Length: 414
Image (tube, rainbow, N blue to C red):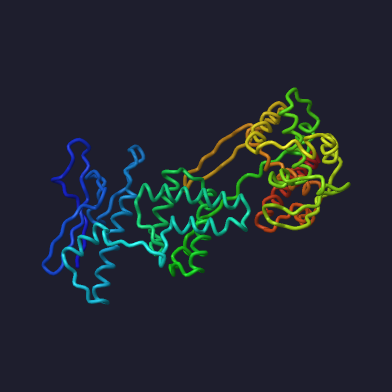
């Protein structure tokens, strides 16, 4: 059986200049020509030798070459599978059977092989009882991306089809259509690979192609407040209570290294005279001891005996909004240049520091300043509950750079 793809130029649209792509199958005297569903392109976007669409120039509107080539590949794969099965089962390749295969009318869905979307939904539900809420939210975000990708491409999402071609098309979609940064794509692929591994362990598929999927995470800038900036914010008088409360929550995170989830779940039973003892929500670390320094105690004492005790918590969205405003009032506005990549595309922005401050930078402030002030990495990790050396190493590198800068500054006049 010979399969080829071509443009049927006589069917070119006068209005759009788009030409439908056809598949031609020749077998045992049978010649069949059928359009590849939904796939049309301009003549200059077709590669005769490769029988695939070419990418458009950067000046042109995106021509869906990724999605359309994926559909052409699916038709080719179905026909090749049919040809292979005809040898194993001695199936007669009739004209009707070939047409059904081109149109995908014989596709079946059953529990022997889950589809990607249905399987991923099952994966989320079965993990909901024992995974951290933030992890489930991340899984849900990945599911929505996969749904949008399937809606755009209409790909056959059987788990046996999650191969390197799928990866190439999905990666291009994430970078070109969704404009993902590299770290966002890396998290998405980690979630997808977790699902594929989960599904394989439960015998839903035996496809190992997903193990070859590679997505690299970049080291990004560690945004934190210097000790001088932190104390300036801590001692600032604010006119609005919203700024004052946000400042207190943020500074408490800077003095303890706690995440939002742990601050939100903090109650008086976990607070002792000189330390907090808690089970960390994200990592499920048990009986973590967080020492309370003078400034952290002052914040707790400020709200002790009030309805806001132990801390005046608000939603994370509002909290991040008010923290930025408070830092702007405190003139924490050093220009910071951040660099990100979307695939190979470099994206660089310079912003005043207050625009980059979120509650999570409070944890980064605690770690970085603790290292700068002489604590060992081991001691700091014991307090923060970091389990991964790779996640912690970036703080150590920052503290080394700061120490070098301070040493050079102190000795430069000799």
